[in-house]
Image (tube, rainbow, N blue to C red):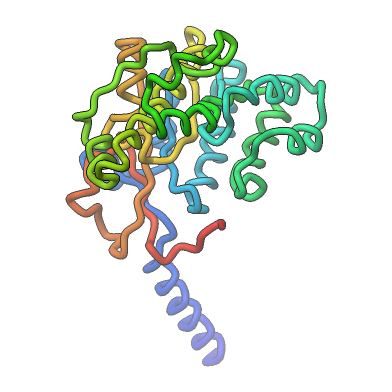
Length: 284
C-alpha cells in the first residue's frame, strides 16, 4: 500500500510539472484567454480566415491542419483553402493535383516548394487532395516581387498581359504610411526604399487571389506569415479595398517567455492570438 502511495504521489508531481508548461494558449482580441472552440465557432462564420503563422513554428502548422479539418467537417464543399507558400503560376499544377489528374509525386517534382514543405504544408495539401478541397496558390511569382524590389511598381508595367494575369490588377494602391510598410522602410533605409512595395505587391496579389476564387457562402482559409495580416494591415487592407464589407477573421502566432498573459505590445494584433513559449522547437 505504501508503495502505491508513493507511486501515486510521484504521478501527481509529474502531472503538476506538465500542466505548468503549456505548449500553447489562445487569446481573443481583448487579451482574454479563450479556447479552440471559440476560435472554430468564429471562423465558421467568416468569409475569409487569415491564419498568420510563424513559418518554423510547429504549433502554428498543427492548428492550421486542425482548423482545416474541422471547418471541412462543418462546411464541406463550402470550404476553399490556399496559401502564401504557393505562387499563382503554380495554380494549374494545384488544380490538376486536386482533380486527381496528376500524382502528388509529379506535383512535388514540378511545383515551387518551400524548404519546409514536407513537414509543414504537405499535410494540408494531402488533406485537400483527399477531400477535393480547392487549394489556391495566392502569392505573386517571386520573380515579379523581385522586380518591384529593384525598380518599384513601375517595373511591372512592361509585363505581358499573360504575366499580368498572375498579379493584382495594376496600378496597385499603396499606402506607405501603414505601420507595417513604414517599419520596413525604416529598416531598409534609402537602399531599401522599394522593400515595402515588394511586400505590398505580395499582399495585394494574395488578397486579389483569395477574392478571385471565393464564392458567395464559402469560407476561404488562407495560410500566411503573420506579418502579412497582423494589426489588420497587409492582406486585410487590400481585401477591404477590393471588397468592402467582407467578414474577415485573423489569427496570429506569438512567442513569449511568459505564458501567463499577452504582453501589452502583443494585444490586439488579431482576432485570435496563439501564444507559444519561446523555447518551442522549430520545424526547420
